Image 1 (tube, rainbow, N blue to C red):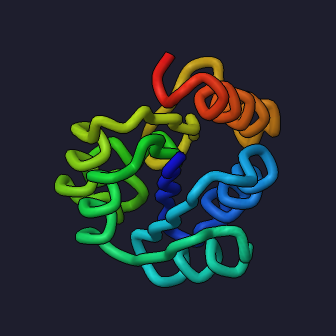
Image 2: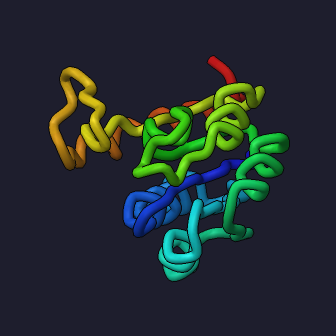
Length: 140
């Protein structure tokens, strides 16, 4: 299973995702792509990613071969994350044939109803869903 994790800004969520995916799906191939070098560095420091890259073109290329794309909701929204998500990145995520597991965040002028900021239950739910996807194939 080829899982792509995309994050920006400081990469804190991306690092948590990479670590959690590695624990949940130890045999998965994890590619971590940061929208900036700090985000990539933070995900690299987890020691859990198989491949790492940075920037817009890396996002676009990695979305072509991913089976599952994981990251904050903003990765599919142009100009999200304080402008770090370019329209090309958002389009690559949204148009990829990969299954998307997006983590809702109430940030950057976006309110997602029903989301408690920083809820550990959201990350746990995402990992359970990824585990089910891996066990049953990529699509439900």
